[in-house]
Length: 83
Image 1 (cartoon, rainbow, N blue to C red):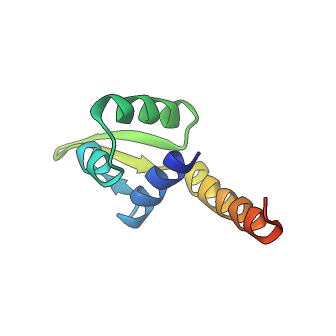
Image 2 (tube, rainbow, N blue to C red):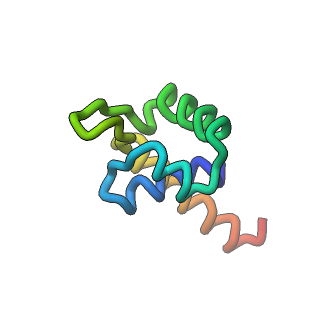
Image 3 (cartoon, rainbow, N blue to C red):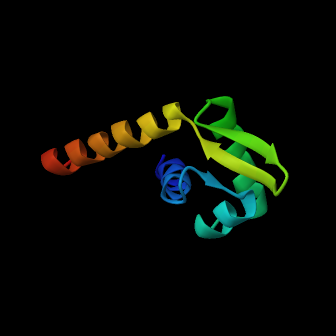
């Protein structure tokens, strides 16, 4: 969950769009790990792939943005109650 949240946060910080290689480096993942997580995020519609004239980009969806908000609230709740 933490890795997924980190990946979505990185994409959001980059304006909602990032090249896959940049995401891999910023999230400190191997290519194999990146592919597994990215496939899962796409399947769950938290991100989408966009093919453009400047290459592929990963775009965060509204569901991805909502996930970050809800995950942050859950983490705050855990901290507040010492869970």
